[in-house]
Image 1: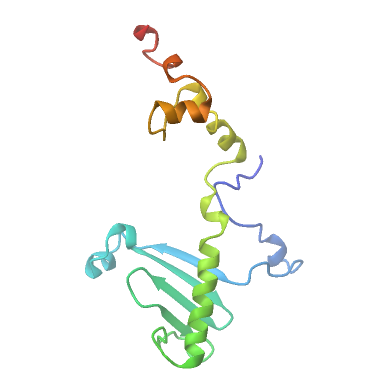
Image 2 (image 1 turned 135 degrees about the vertical axis):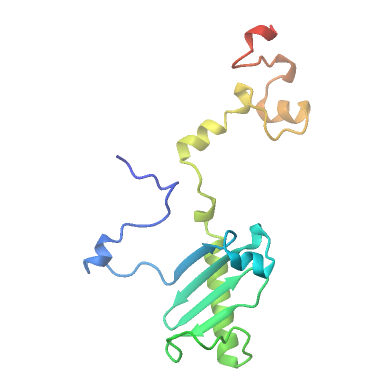
Length: 165
């Protein structure tokens, strides 16, 4: 069976586990949706914002939680994660915060967040308007310009189409 990269993002970790290949990522990233937990209700966070993203690099752990200040731990000096330096104005902490935010933004805007279907599926969807699936057209003129077919020449397909003739 062929792998389905549009469903699960990631790589085979077997070479890394067996020590035959080096690390292929600079950061470790984790996401968590806490919308169904009591915490979201207690904090009065709407479902669409009840999400945290954590990025880990070397000694630094940065947690972004929509609507709140970032949480940062220096795991070298604080391995128990007891001292949040996310709001610290110390020059070193400001620099780390900026670097972690930039790395998180870079990761979030990569194409991986857009992959939802294989190239074959997307190619078939590109022909949907030609077969009568009219999603996303403002009016007849926009349809005709995009598909190069007359709108009034459309014939319904599917269940009930025969009875409409």
